[in-house]
Image (cartoon, rainbow, N blue to C red; front, side, top):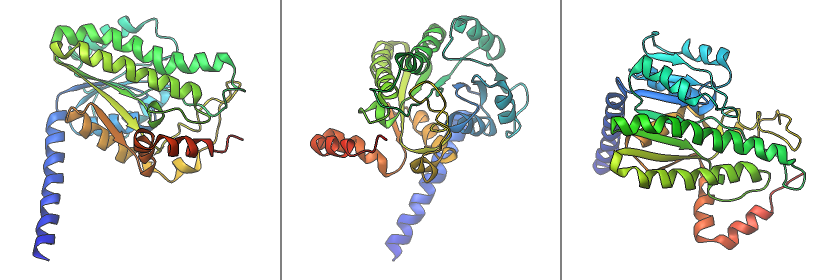
Amino acid sequence: MRKLISRKNTNQRNCINTYICSVKSIKNTVWWITGASSGIGKDMAIYILNNGGNVVLSSRNEVKLKEVILQCNANENNYLILPLDLENTGNTEEICFTVIKKFSKIDFLINSGGISQRSTVAETSLDVDRRIMETNFFGTVALTKAVLPIMIKQQSGHICAVSSVVGKFGFPLRSAYSASKQALHGFFESLRAENVKNNIKVSLIIPGRINTSISNNALTKDGKVHGVLDDGQANSMSSTKAAKIIINGILKEKKEVLVGGKELLMVYIRRWFPRLFYYLASRVNTK
């Protein structure tokens, strides 16, 4: 019994120490978060601002970004609302200048913005495939390329891309979404290898089912909004908890941060038991 109590107390102390270290690491740093108007991006922004960090909040919806600020203990010196449409990123260098003018540096770039999908390959129009790739991959790449010279000049920085478990494997009803996320893995792993000499860290964030609006906003076969919260997401980990796990993983400089529930087992099943994975994937209802 004494051993169990001692172990429990040790775990509690470790959790407290981890939290204190995380908070200290956040203070006075500058985080640029895309997709900051909802879900994981929103909760990351709130957590960072409430713990002494500075945040650039970006998404297409400026009104919702302003609503996020109302939920934080922040003043106008600590944040910058910077609307950004990842599908149209022709002004990335200009908006980078706006960030540097405000904060003089960028410590973390969190590429959290993106859009999902709920349709089969056979029924999905090529325009929808292109839109998903443009937003999830090319939009993220464009912003990263604009921020990279700043971090190289600083000789420091940390760039993160929010992928998905389906960035690890293909899955029914997610063809273009899965492809866009797998493309991020190839791009950001190359980026990491090239910039070790510049002291730039790169992390891939791999969420499973998180209770966000991603399924509501997913595109269907003809580009319309799905408008339905998946059952699996409705009963999954909260975005608030996921955001804390992700931030802790980033501050520990993990190359990959997996976050979610039992669905993460599919990553390991795909790796070690591929035949079982193929069977399970083929049993998914696509109607």
